[in-house]
Length: 481
Image (cartoon, rainbow, N blue to C red):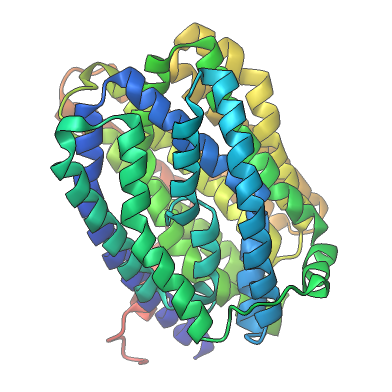
């Protein structure tokens, strides 16, 4: 009965997130298309550098590696007001110093004007995708599984942004896009702050002992966001130094092909974290099997969707860019496939935290940063924008291999084996995508990718017949309801 209740809770929560995210990205597609079809590739390179560098920098300084653990704490002990309030004020102060540091670094790396960097930093603080204060204010809602509220506020953001971009399309530049992002996200950001105050979660207090209890019990998580974001920042810096703003622009545009995979990660893992947290809190040993199923099913769902998007890469380029990037279909397909490997590393971060194997989560992400140093420069010089995607793939494989070995050494052999099987499946799917790119007809390309991914998923036991029973338990009209 408990398994059915958990499955139905997950189905309800992920269903709300799915509907909300579909609505969000249906509207956001208008914004993406407006930006990519209007801005020159070099200008989009500046926008990409500012957006991704500031998001990565804030992820480090805001200590976002602790977010999963904070949701876990708020879920198990909802009275952690002191911890949440202290965290908000600490991150608010850190945000000011981060903005100044980012502006100085971007000026040195890519000659980005300081004013543009500061506007980008301000926009990142309030954006739902910015990994800064907005993400922090959403943590209590995540712990309460109020995903409908989070989705509604995100939709408000993107509605305002799409409208402003369409109105100002004739005068768009990297700077104006960042200003419009800031303006569109402010209303929902302020509303989240008001909701936190009214719920009694946000107060004028700073309790250092609350922070100490968080940091001392899971100190390795302090390095999680550091290595993860360092990987992103190194990739962009090396791409800019070894290439041109145009190459950065092509990479930035193609990264939108990974959006479906990234969206699904949030949809699936946002409800899974509190649900698995409750199960592990009640019976750690008995919950390992559920953890393994969560890893397999979440990654399989994300991977299959990523392969479908890769198969439809020519159509994706037309929809997202209006044909502006028609000469770069290959990198769009590669970026989508990379979502499969990203999903595995994303799962490792969450499972390492929930299972209190903090060093495994941190070590895996550290391999991403090491991979950037090992692979980026020579692959970018050899293959341009496509080279950075290949380097990211190699870094992810290094991270997954490290995590598999550490899980096995820790006695959690079932998870280690599942990670190996998921990785082999991803590589076979990648081979199918590479083979499909050699074909001329879009339909043939799509069939090769979909059949290769689906067939190998069944062969490796990633998708099983028994999964239909789990899916039925998620439905609200299931007979056990």
